[in-house]
Length: 343
Image (cartoon, rainbow, N blue to C red; front, side):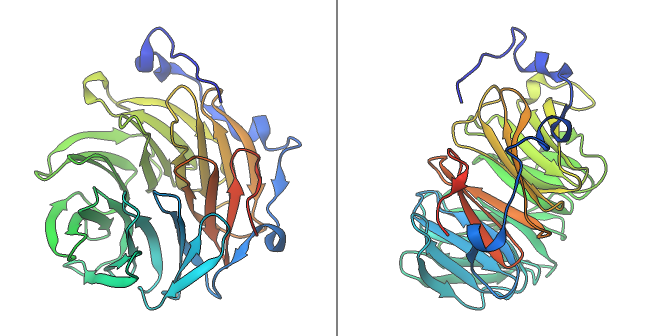
């Protein structure tokens, strides 16, 4: 997608932009096709696929099932490399460290599990202090990894040993993302998003917008300024997180996208995307995958997953492929051609 310029007023002038209703614009066009099971998916587990992650170096595709099994595939061709057994009960999300070496996942059994993808050895298996479900995991850097959940704290651990380095009160949360090593965005169960300073725990700003339930997903663009979120209200919202430009009540909300008929469980931005141009991919409870064009703020294409609720999406570092997980399968697509990359 070609780059476009921001309006003369910059990000602030975009605050008055109208809501984009993707359903009205694009769902019924000729590009709207069904995601049919056997032809376009990779069978990975006998139970539900709860999480997918493409490594930051683009070499591995990791999928985690609700039976506690993690499957590691060659991201280039889908070849199965090995399986990791008993990684956790009802795995919710997984992530790979920036250097591509460490896999971390969280589960509703309260554990964070870490695994070395190079040596193929377990690093640690640590419960959170109050043993309540963990819902999301993200790497702060190669040395530290973090998680949030129902306990209401942001837990930061060492990737080398699993040692708990910090526990910061944030309130119960479903999602998190690091803007940089000193600021983390936390998506709460009450519909707010907090920018939290590390390690002090100071709340720099609270975004209000998803006011009808949980914020299931938060992700930063490459510019480390723009944040995208998805929530139980069915909307996708894009925010400017430089708090010196924020005005109440919605802070730095730039625009929102509407198209999912139900909660948005995960939204990711393609590497290189900006608030002016690029691509977003989202999945939701309505059993659909949606690809959005940022420059026109419209829905480019939509797939229906034949009744399969989709909970995760991960985009490769080169921006060419993405993987989605849900039901008994994971599907891998070419984001440029919008055709299956491999079966």
